[in-house]
Image (cartoon, rainbow, N blue to C red; front, side, top):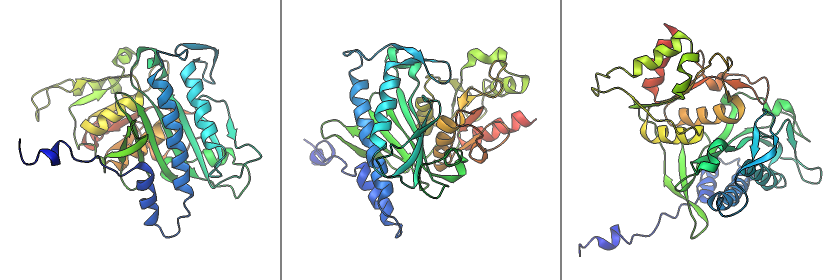
Length: 342
């Protein structure tokens, strides 16, 4: 038996929990009140509750569709509804938030009158990739947190319609082969993996960085004939032989945006959902999906654009606004910019 067996095989697990990581981050800011720690602690609890149902979805009556539609005219999945309600009720009473908005809901989600109103607002997509739920493919929750702009009381629509360059924090929870909580407060991107045996998110990926250049792209290429010539030229270019690797880029598309993002965060490359003849303004939601993931991409050293400008500089005009998006490795997105601008 090698002498380092116990250190390598039986070494103790990493014991930096998500909450401890947040607390230690707040200690670096003397004016911090602990409110933010409590907010993310509530969110991590909601993530564990949602994970519990996702993990046994085939065993309980929570798969399949409901009988109603969401605000976008899409049939709601049972797990969508469950995740939406779970996150809202985990966050509505802690005194950290003054208003919320969800991709599944039509308007503002008010904090009940009996609870205190805090200094933050949160927008969230309760289950990104819900079309994949019944096929047991990775899905996720995406969230973004802003400081309120209004002075006090109930939050307003103006509190929610802030550009990404004003974010206080953003992140996602990935429900896949393991459950991960990935977040940033503007000081790098950190990933925590849920250890079900102790019920804690433990630090597994610190200071995550997107490689400068990738080898893969992620897009629904079935829409190729609906794209304009400039967009088609982008993907024609990446399917040519890359002199650096002597091979073309490979297509990797999961169909859950947050899962595609996570792959790119680890391995590089880029994701795109361009405008097309049907979705001339893009398909993905600016506030619930594109702003938080673009923030994380930039915090990890990548870039995120809509084809003409930086996503984080876009001013949302509606909480359900859509946008085109390209994000990923810095060098790859700069190539996309050059091809779209030419």
